[in-house]
Length: 417
Image (cartoon, rainbow, N blue to C red; front, side, top):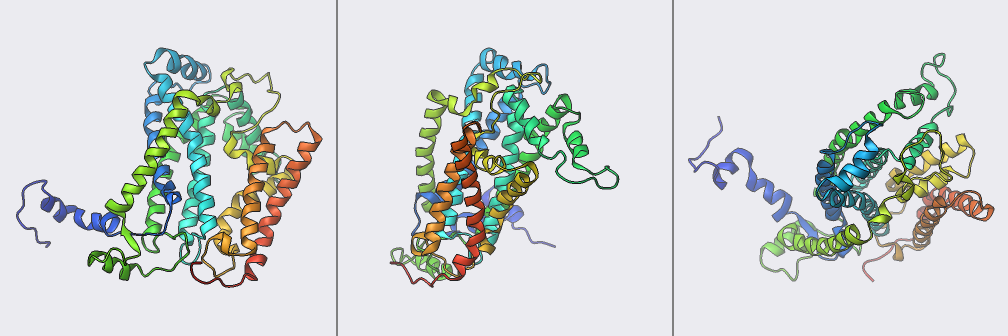
């Protein structure tokens, strides 16, 4: 039988005997060590968690007045919440701006990890759990985009689900073919009440629960290998932690997560939230498509259908090709990011600027994805822009094909220069 010393109910000692709160605090904060040589980009993870928290809170307030009904959803969002509910506009602006900024931070976080090699040498699970978060955030954003039930909501849902139709041959006499899957997904032949209800459930319940679990997993994968640093230096965390605890803080190469690193995180988050609320109050329109302020009309197709900006790069990979080929490349683009730790064959854990051809590869990838994003927003009617988009899509695919070969011939790099 476990031994319990007498303690005042709910005191620190009483709680520690039952929940090991002191051990949890030591493992997760005061003795979780962070390298000194990192910059503000390492705060993006905490900013993401904080932004997700704001999205949850604002979503709860919006949920109080939203009705997942095709006849009422548009009015609930654009009239009830925006005009009749006190500060309803405020919570909608927060939710819309947060949904866009969370992807901006995700992309910054992702490219920071690629640039500094934070997916290598024992940190593969950090990258894989992060990419699973990216996929679930994408599913959460897409399902939320359906809920206002405006023109772009309806037609984006129609186009995306149509992608699966006829993509593969019939299986078992047609019982498992993709047209049947599309009807099952929509609950009808076209998006309607069942479609809206299913995406409502995904957005407010299933995806948030998955995201919460993956956030815990992502932070858990950081605990043993620890975060990387901007020099790619291999640090003996136990030795450096011993120096810090012995009072030799200048010699130590690490700092405790709480309170030292956390205070830096809080400062960066403060700067970020100044930008966040500036956008909420003064430039919220960037996060709200004007076409979506028209009610959904199945009989009136918008001139140009496109997804939100954070999906445009992958949409442009799909668009220049025929349906089946486009779907193959689209699936390739989504899945290949997961394979980065295994495609990069170099043993070097160093910033991209010290890795020869990888530096060129990194900047080409970044520029190419920006180009794809820009081209994805433009109508496909201009042949020049259509050609640029197709070249950018082929370039994206080619970059990932050549990655294993250019990293295999990469020369070893030394220490910090």
